[in-house]
Length: 241
Image (cartoon, rainbow, N blue to C red; front, side, top):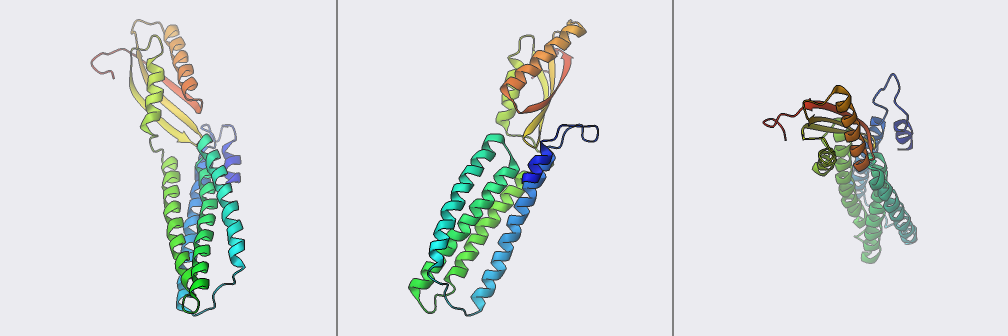
């Protein structure tokens, strides 16, 4: 995650004119894949332990698990909060990685408790609990992987974001309509491509000035807009939106 964020923070250059933001989504996809791998590994190990008779875990492991649950859940909340603030898929994936540890530890705590309380014959309780935890981790990993792949494939952002951009453009004095609007996410930044209709009698200079005001209005409403491309067009009432 750290490597992905570090690369994504680089400025655009001749080789990557649109920047390195995709490294952030790629890091999120890698973390999600690792979570899926961990879920598979836990499931295989738990299934093997269920088939193989073994002793119940030591009671002192409950104290260790209790500490792990608290620490990991605190870390998960802090990291998930940071991910929500900057819109980072990679940071959110790392937050769910911490939460997956907390979930696994909580399941182990429950399973070991049942095994210790139940006595002989209940030794596999912690292994069944591990299977439940693995399922939860796999679901979270799959959802995170879907989000990361969506960013990598230029999936359209939430409709609310598009409404914010269109309202900012339409509220700019001189804008009569907008015809097309496309937004794509790259890392924690957004790139906006919008067609703006204005008075067809505007001079090229005035149209250029108007496009600059539209760009400023969009960036004011959406600070994460790293690039805003304005296409100026003559106002056509029949085809406008």
